[in-house]
View (cartoon, helix red, strand yellow):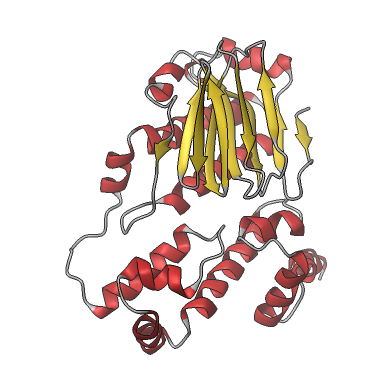
Length: 302
């Protein structure tokens, strides 16, 4: 049975037992690239790890918010939001969250005959800044699909599927230009409608963050007042109201299709205050998050 841990508020992680790791090593497909540990730490205050005795896995840490640092080969590196790094196997290292602005991270321990291909060139922080053609939400959805697949069970079919997804997940970082180009928006004419679509895309890429009106208007290059008026004219909503709608839409999906606790869901949509999240959800959906999740069971019984 896999081990699921819950430490930091909103944390989720899976640690595979040695028996399952050995199964991965023996399988001709999975052995090319496989996971030994995987997790998500939101606002990981006081997070610190030092390995003087190195592990035999590569360690990917993808920072989506906040900041942190790590030490490798005696050199310390600063890490900020929208950066990732990969600590190579068999090398001592340490890493920690920033004391004042702790990071939110996705992390994966991975091995396999193809592991070095994806780890190459990532010992220094690599930038994945959001832009009009970025696909951060696609990448984060890939992570969730990997995590859910492994959480459902670690039979060989699930392990093979998770391995296949991991190739794509790591490739979305290692081959960032190709990943973005493949999903690029066709056409480059910048009219009002496209500006609004670009702003909504930016919101969708940053659902795990707290964006302000200034953040959104700065991204589009317009003043806050002009952007706000234009966005309301195009959509019928203020920018921040629309952003909250996207957060609630994502929360509904997570409640419907994952087993995350409500407190984990609220962190996944960038709301650290679970009481505020519940009030916002109730205002939008007419019921609490728990009532929303339980309605499926009720309908099934009827």
